[in-house]
Image (cartoon, rainbow, N blue to C red; front, side, top):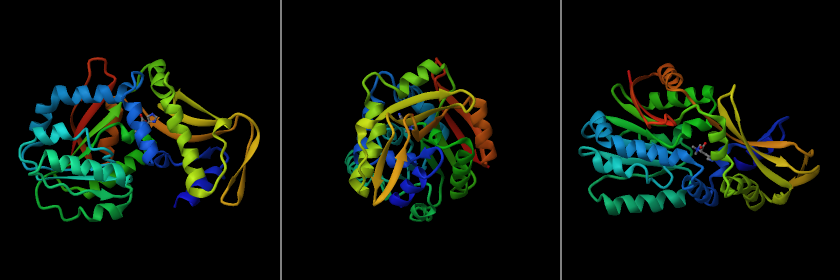
Length: 306
Ligand code: AVJ
């Protein structure tokens, strides 16, 4: 529950907020704008890897596959794949934002009228939303998990999530998953601290959301966006820094902020190809191959349930 998660996160020594709450309708739209920024190379690079290798990927997946997409959002990335695949069985997007998901579903149905499309609204890390997909007709299922979404989870949780995915699948089923690669910290930090301040607005929106939904009085002008690469943890951390000592009221409770104290709002983990293959392997997916860009900024992995 939102209130419980917020109070729990802000009650910790290092204050945190679960990053999934960044993605309400406004947050999801801000994130779409981030994806179009020059500084945010991830989306563009991934799209280029897909378009350069789509025929190859469709051949690797083979005919009659069902595509399940956890965290599908606007479902735009999957479209070229669905068009390239040999007679796909169906497309099953899952997302927590019903507005964006249902609009996307209508668009896909209009563009690919012969394809079965069934959208599930919910948190894809919870078993409930997968129950509706339990009886997908026999045949190969491929999880489509682009966008480096897996990077939001720390490696331990990421391994657990992949394992959770693997147990939802049958032998021979597969995952097509995008990961941002470890690289120069200047390039990484520019991607999360963009010159147009869209990421700052995206980060602060979580406070606006708490104000709107939980009867709180965060003053957004008292917080600054901060993002930095942590080389040992191999992740970009996103924080909101309190600019002075003050108190915030949330649903009748007081939360105190010291000057310079931060709320840790998101992690974006980076992997090497070998590091990610190890994670896949430990989770029950045999890594088959990967595609990357010339600059080795980003990788798309294909792995199969043993
Ligand atoms: C949606 C998790 C892939 O980590 O790059 C982008 C989220 N946060 N800018 C990422 C994000 C700030 C994004 N992912």
